[in-house]
Image 1 (cartoon, rainbow, N blue to C red):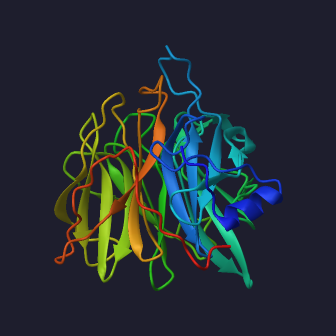
Image 2 (cartoon, rainbow, N blue to C red; image 1 turned 30 degrees about the vertical axis):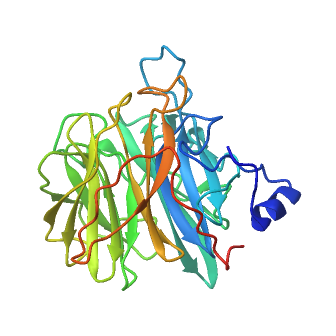
Image 3 (tube, one colour; image 1 turned 90 degrees about the vertical axis):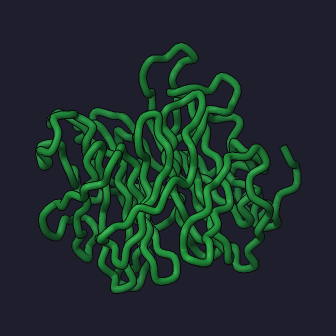
Length: 324
């Protein structure tokens, strides 16, 4: 673990923000973290994770809250604590599963929209909620007072967890899409207010799809990445629009040892691209005690993504001059 931290992180520490975590993979050796989501804002990358709290011999996920961290250089991370707990959604039973986030300007001010997976208290199954904050580090508050998507709204499967892993993508024309699902990939348009659906939920046929759908754009190409098979590996497809049609692209990251899940998020930061994921490499780690890590992601000249190996050292420092 390296001890040097950036001047920006020192400034945050002086304001009472928790200090740097680490400069190597897994990123946060004092916490079991999972299901990464990422946002680049004002020259800083913000990383949102679930918090695995299962006992060493646990047989299920124990997740009550999300955590948020930030970095100016992809190496040194500042811990901003807990921006939200599952039970902050009063209609939820609990279970702080995977999330995603985006930033929109509303009435001239930035608003951060946090889409999350929780278990519903009164409608059987998992649901998608949306919360908002004026800051990327929270606190986030329920934006609706009710779920955005509930298990009874989709009937493609009879499992309780087929509406998990929300991922939000805002296209160049301002149209926002929400992708989600387990075993069946689904997406839906969002209204400009970002807290209502704009039309019917659509499904996408993806061979071997498991979960963790995620859409990003690089140059003029759209990339749909996701977990396939079980144990999972990270695969991707490409297309001419945010809704496809999608062409298979191959495998980005091979399956883990120690945990069958992997769950990616992909961002561009300071001229380079990065993929966040989780594994089980911390001492005592396992299926329900995971750990978030990051690697640099590279594109070939034809737009294909190069396969990414998991490393202990992670990416090289990439300090952002505009970080604040």
